[in-house]
Image (cartoon, rainbow, N blue to C red; front, side, top):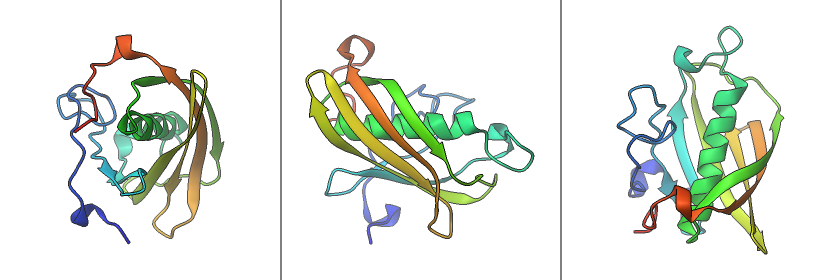
Length: 148
């Protein structure tokens, strides 16, 4: 199994709320790419992202999934932004527990790019899953993002 310790991290991008190191209010995730093009990270959300007592806010989960699916599509060579997300909340995510997020690009149709992602609890069960539709938006992103 591919783990973070066996891969080089993908370069982060500054002030991003989810994966930038320059945002003092950000989550600070580090992304890793597998050979199959999927993206993943192991991380922990804290009381700063709390919604229901002791659990992660659904919006924090959505933000993580938006970013990781976008990263998978960006790594495939497209500067995109999300236009639609369909999120299924299956289980609450406890704060201060190490979870894993994974995502992949699943297709392209005209201007639309499709991706899926999941957040897994420590026991391997899916807490949150998402399908997303993205469109190219190069005017929002620098050309070299996530292309190494």
